[in-house]
Image (cartoon, rainbow, N blue to C red; front, side, top):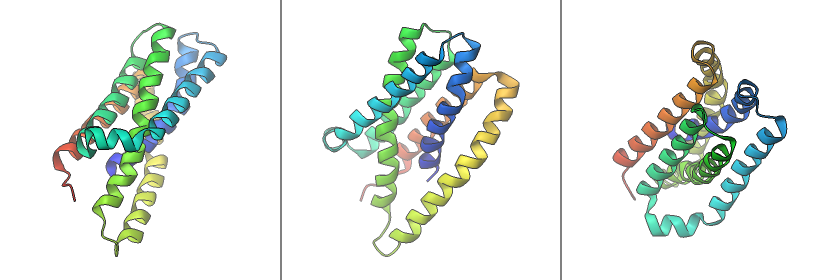
Length: 173
């Protein structure tokens, strides 16, 4: 559930803070919009191949790889990189988040019994909504202290750690 909250909220925080990063680094609005589009298209493409990738790699390693991949993309945004590298980072982030978001849903479904499915999905949605309120507030406090780059580093660490926890602690059914 925590991985689900972090994955969903990271996308919201990207949408909130990427324009601020653009303002700080003199990146024009058109490029910010195109960067967000690249992320969205990459996410869509990853979901189209999700079934094949999960069969090839497996659920646990794919969870770790996708969340770490998304984290790498966020770290790149925190660094002073060229705009062309930002496009690559957004592609990696979008592809990884597309898989990670889908996995966070299917992992919860995979762990729940048929009798508890409704309750588990309600808890997942409730957790996501609480995270979507609480985490942006916490992010604003971090941004005040560290700047926009600090937000992206915290998101990257959160994604990588939650991916590792899922990878190391999850039992397959």
